[in-house]
Image 1 (spheres, each protein chain N blue to C red):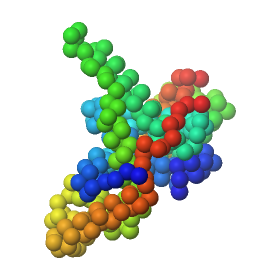
Image 2: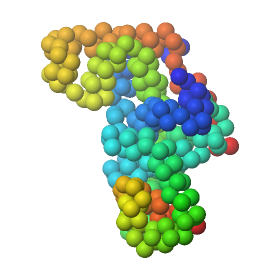
Image 3: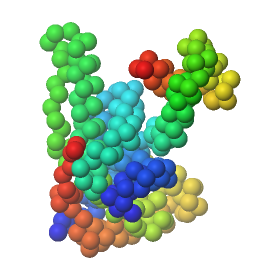
Length: 84
Length: 185
């Protein structure tokens, strides 16, 4: 069994500072963001006009479909479209 | 909930469990990037997001669901080294970054994580006051104002809660050295 004194415990508690809240929130939002990305890519595969609109003006095309075209989403869609 | 249960539920698409997983390991990943590898803030942010993105994408490759911690540590470490290497390529010759594996510090972070997990099992008022004082560096005055307690009470409560945490650690025999090692499938 490991033994601890209070000073050692305090030192160990000090080591784990909270990560910036925005970083944590962004990581926590990965699953819904990933589903949204899949939905957009699927729609682009099925709808040539939507795909052309995305390539011509990504931000406007996403907004027109009701998505909030934040930079993370735009980058993710662009990467997926480029890789296909 | 154990790590194994958490991972299993994340694989089934439980978003709340994914949030819990990130919450449980965010400080650990952050500490490896910032303290062990001393990455600047922007690089640390990139590594932090990449670690969780890859973890989310490759959860099914985890060989042993209970080995989440070493898996995340390995992933973070590899991405930190890649980041430092790509940075060192842009530096003049003779000014290259020394990339040593900061094993000792990562071992301490493993131990710190075990202590942090034990702290989370304490009553909320204990966990909160210890976290505010030690991890968030808040003063007695700030804590007192937030929790509506006199400073003297804050000090005595920190002391009592620390003793309680010690009892929890020694009573349950939490020891990160016994944690299983993990890796990619």
